[in-house]
Image 1 (cartoon, rainbow, N blue to C red):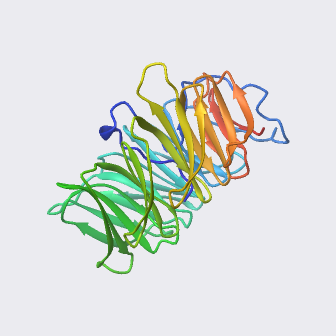
Image 2: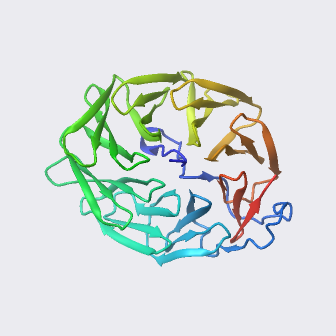
Length: 357
């Protein structure tokens, strides 16, 4: 999957990382965006001034407090539906997106063929989708700690596992839709449980003793990343630890994954210091590190490219941290969504446009 990481804000005070790079309040996109033959790209974003956005393959998805939409590569609306989600949450993948309100009972899946509304009476805690169009939903469940439901590309619930121990925080579906991983807090730390989606029997388990982890993501087939406040652990979904990255003395501000790598934004606690950008492979091997002279605010990645939001500019890099281009004076930008071809969708002032360096 190629999506921006989901950091659970109640466990990191003051750090709320959106499904894409959320930058600042509304503004006007300048003419310097369309540097290539993209003058025909136009997406109407009126009414989405208070919204969240997610990459959806070559397109993107948006959810506001009154509506949610799925957009195609050229800014065309593929699916739109009026819904009220007061605490906006969104996850996107190739050609689809899921939107919900954390703790609410309803979840909407957007596809080019239309939308589907699903109800989880115990309240949705987390959700995600993969590039096959399969969704996974973590929800409350009477008599259990929670449940995880897998929904296929036709919007049919096809698998459910009930959680009887620990406090479930997150779940993710493998890229091939054959396995589901569940992160739970326990009395001794954190645990990841992995199930095959054709069996209720536990396939594998991995435990982090004495550490409170808050986020989980499938980076590639068979490989997971587990995130805590001072460490990222890279684990095979058979329960074996592959590697780890420690950022003790720093804090995680955001992360995103692309093709075969993950990028992590770190901040430093000392006043006046800045931070670092780390690039690692899916086994946790550090590939590149870049000290930042400006404060970073968010990241979005797709394919071999990433966009990093700084206080006063947005910079596009390749996965080797070579600078491809930058957009200055970005205080008016609402969101930037990276695409796999190296371009970014810039959303501002009720419109969306393409930035290609």
